[in-house]
Amino acid sequence: MPHHKSCIKRIGTSEKSRISNRKLKSRIHHTIKNLRNAKDKETTDIELKNAFSVLDKAVKAGVIHKNKAANQKSKLSTPVNKTAS
Image 1 (tube, rainbow, N blue to C red):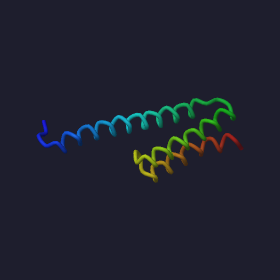
Image 2 (cartoon, rainbow, N blue to C red; image 1 turned 90 degrees about the vertical axis):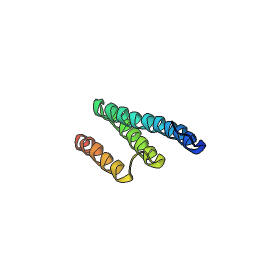
Image 3 (spheres, rainbow, N blue to C red; image 1 turned 135 degrees about the horizontal axis):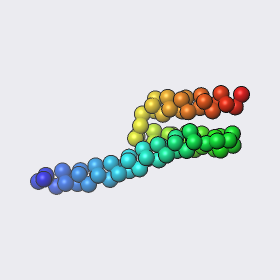
């Protein structure tokens, strides 16, 4: 166990951010899963928009890197665009 007051505070801060990051990552996985399970065009468009929003929020919060979000957006939109045409 840490003896310094600042170390004790840092453990609490780290735990809070760990929980927050975990929630956001879980939300990313669920929205991507919902997008891949979408059947019709309308649902797919809505889920794609939600996935983009969640990825952008994760970048803003610093949970994932902006290039990772860009790569995921590209991977998710490619099959959606192919089915549209």
